[in-house]
Amino acid sequence: MGKNILLTGATGGLGKILAEFLMQEGHRLALTGKSETAGDVTLLNDSFFISCDLRNEHEIVELVREAEKRMGTVDVLINAAGVPGSGMSWKLTLEEWNECMAVNLTAPFLFMRELLPGMRARQFGRIINMSSVVAFKGVPGTAAYAASKAALDGLIRAVSAENIQKGITVNNLALGYFDAGMLYRIPENIREEIRSTIPAGKFGNPQNITSLLRWLISDEADYITGQTLQINGGLYS
Image (cartoon, rainbow, N blue to C red):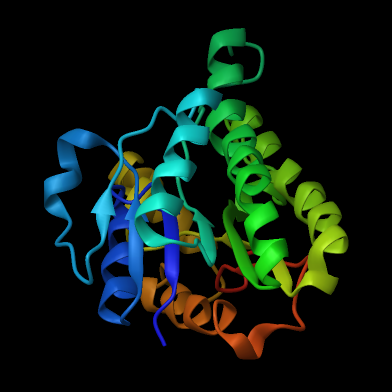
């Protein structure tokens, strides 16, 4: 049976793949992402876009209210939006640091905060955040990004402990380097250097993510919560 899902970052390289996969699985989605590329996503099952500045608390609250109004419930939250926040630590401006934290950490928290009361009342919910191997493996030039993703680990451990008895699971997927999305913001020569460090010898296939996502949002995945699941081809364990 299809679920009602709120997905952020739906127009990014990976987000678009997740959105189209979930709709093809029969779920109805409330999507948010860059408005200029929203038309690139083919909508199915009465799914819809809502514009939102993820740095703005008021807009996040309004997005959740609109999604709940149009779908009745939000059963699943997937926080896939993210900004890279790249730059050496001694060169980062406070503005760059704050934007990375706002989108990668504070926005997921705000979406959780707004959706948890309804999930608790219905005694069902699935919350999944997209984290990164970069949070666990020191990578130069990623101080803000790594800190924002690492903080998700502590956040979901607390939130999962608070809500598991209400049938709500909260997990992170810490992604390695996949053949989609932010990877192609990296120059080709550096991409090849990264590929050479991956024990699997290749970049991940997005299907590795979608197959796991299918299970995590199912009713059968009610006993896995508070986990950061590493999906990285052996790059970090």
